[in-house]
Length: 357
Image (cartoon, rainbow, N blue to C red; front, top):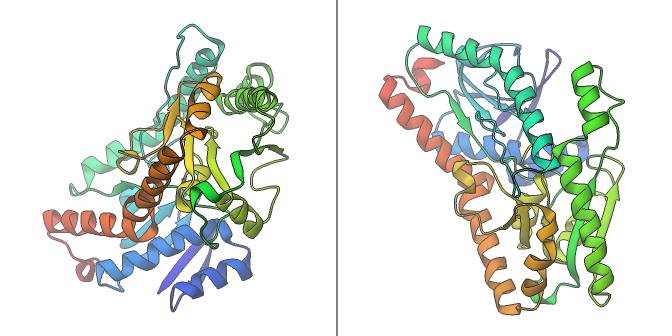
């Protein structure tokens, strides 16, 4: 199976003979963040029973090195959930953030947190307008066919390690994440002002979580709690150490990132942790996800205290986490679903992979 990675008009080619080859390549090339999408493309090619599709992993919203109806673009890291400008020039675009930017107001409605979230929503929706207009115009000019699909973010810094039953795990609660204090890295004056003087929903949620977790830890000194603030994204433990720590964790706290979503939720579910998270966006793969949700992290103690005192419930939720990962969010499960929708889309439009190549 062949997959391409697009970076600044350069197209790197990767050939995978089997699943083990994917893991080895990511390890050797330091592409751990691409493993999930490599596996998704690997399984999709098998599900579609065709070598005529060309899979391209990209972060570029404006251009690809080549176009064609046989190209499937796997778009990652666009937290603003935009259809790329080239969506009408390729067969399909699979976006890890979908195409509907979502945010939620928390209770109480009159709060600083909601003001911050509202300002960010307005700013992002404003920046989405050119992409939405472009897609609407070009969709009207081309044959009606579903081209855009939402897919899970998947895991980033994670690998399979020996399994531990949930009640045998030594870490009761786990949070490890970064909090950015200022807007110094931003050049856009609006973004800079927003980050510096108002902070972001991401920072607000994580700061609140860390503070509430510290208080909870002081009240419960016998519990083994990890509350680790990192210097930045993917900093801290290496992939193997992080994966072992996840496997040692009973309850993983997964606060929002810059968007509502985070790799941590998928990594924790893949490991069989019980997950407590911010409210998730309305995507097909989150329907029925067996996580516990909070309006904001001031609810932490009321959610986790009874949970940690209920081994049977921990066991039940852990089993549901593993089942959800395998049946809904794993690369194989996603490949089966998206491939089925692509086949249905092609039947409607009367096109096949052979005709598109």
